[in-house]
Image 1 (cartoon, rainbow, N blue to C red):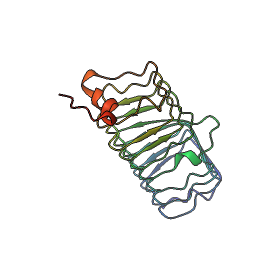
Image 2 (image 1 turned 60 degrees about the horizontal axis):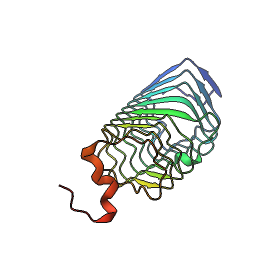
Image 3 (image 1 turned 90 degrees about the horizontal axis):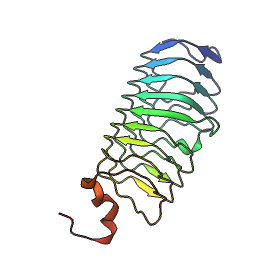
Length: 194
């Protein structure tokens, strides 16, 4: 196994098939790096920095991301169960997700406008006081995702499914929905929508 903690700084390196599950990866900086088929589940990634990196087919489930910086990060086909992204460093926080599992993740109190969530499973994800302006949830399964006092202005839910959002407690001006999915906005009223 390549020892990625031997050095505190890595630039333009591709890491493949690493197993850092249940290990510490604290205070390490990665720029323009790619991680392929790596296991960081239950890894302590606190205070680490990732800048313009890509994660492909990786498992980061239950990773500790306290004060971790994610700047322009792309996750593709990754498993990210139960991550509390609200503990990340907010400065320059930017990521996108494609074909990922983000169930039971928390995005509470974050400003992540413009984030692209594409074809992701996001069961029980928490969006409490989250700024989601101009975000896209294209093809996402939002079963039991919780939106509370969040800003969803111009967010695109046209191809999202299984969501329930209360328009009375979320700011939603200009949010985009398909007519077929309006049931997810009216569920609390107990209407029979056919």
